[in-house]
Image 1 (cartoon, rainbow, N blue to C red):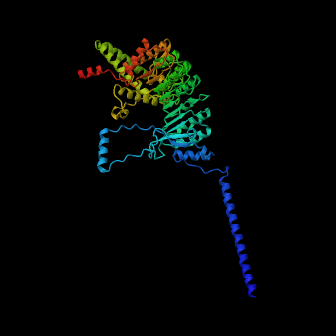
Image 2: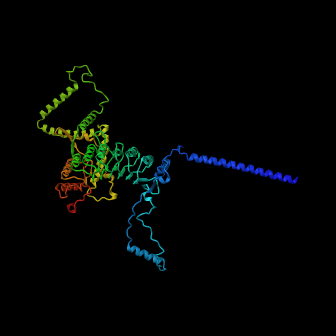
Image 3: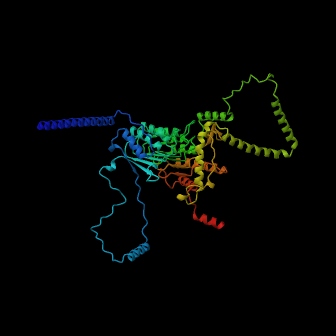
Length: 569
């Protein structure tokens, strides 16, 4: 009986172990099933990810959006700090070196042992950095920061030598507007299409501090660069060098600068050097400068501009006749300016009168006016000798009153369309005053900003169509663009004929400058003309250079004149 009882107990323990093993297997299966289900759910491409909120840190936001667009880790461009050239260290002073050696010798009385040259290795070079094979050709995004330890302080972005497609520009559209301190974007050889340029133009105004954009060495077949400087653009500096821009692209850029009814009021500097712009394109750009009063610097260097293009540019800088469309727009502006309430309140027709008097009866106010005129004429006859004095006094008073009235009309009575030109005119006047105040002085990096006491006053501008006109040959002529202070026409095909037109334009601006006691606009201050189809010994070229030399704000007069001034003082 004892043997049978031991066998039954062994059998019961075995059965318990079998049941326990089945339970463990079941639990493991359940766990493995749930984990595999979670992995499948995580790897499901159809699952919509949770919305991501940008942090303002470009590297983190850019990487996250690339992953959400199903880019692999090895396909995501790396965000790196832009390398800087090593600083030049001054050579060590011989005296300080000897004193340092003497101090070291006094501290360590033991003689110096000869170093083992074979055991020491040369330090790595500091002028370049070695990389892995093909790492140089992988796309990267270079950034500059105010503080390298704070990635949120990205100020400049540089992209070199890889194509930016719609997917990548869509990622930039989500990242760049959240970078508060981003002010410069520099792209080179990035192969943009028209759709990508449209996408750039749609979100660049959303970047609060982005003012400088450079897209160089990039060919766009459609040449739709004008989209970047539309009316909503906040860019102040645009560089489009070596992009193969032809007269087609120049025509669109000219229309973007200004038309009769629209004007870009923010762009200050435009660089179109190294393109294929001929006289037709230069004429289109000159057409855009007729109503533009914001652009200060224009570069058409290394293009195909010849005498006809130079003539058109000179015409815009001096004076030009208004076209029929501009005359019509001028009349509209004058009518709105003269009666700002016109269109809101309709006056009754002349046949309907407010009172019941007949048309032949004059009103009392009209009779009062005629009586006053008669009184004035009788007084003038009675005065005799005092009449001439009164005439002179009234003329001076009227002239001052008319000037004051014109000024008040320009500032107060202008229409809403006039506001398009005010901002650019203010920038131009401030920049021109800054350039002329530094004339003849040595400028350093510390003296680039003017002190508060010397800052120029803000001058409100009027629409160029409302400027004083001159009637010649049944045409209305207005003064040209005097906001531009820098024009680069070097390395073109301009001959003596074009140089004469440019000389006349500069002389006309100088004449207007001398006639105005305190002009807000100074006109052309620098003009680069080297490398054209004219000899340097040409009389017109030499005279033009001589006139421009005295207008250059960085021109330093000869020392003899300074000595004479010091002796006279």
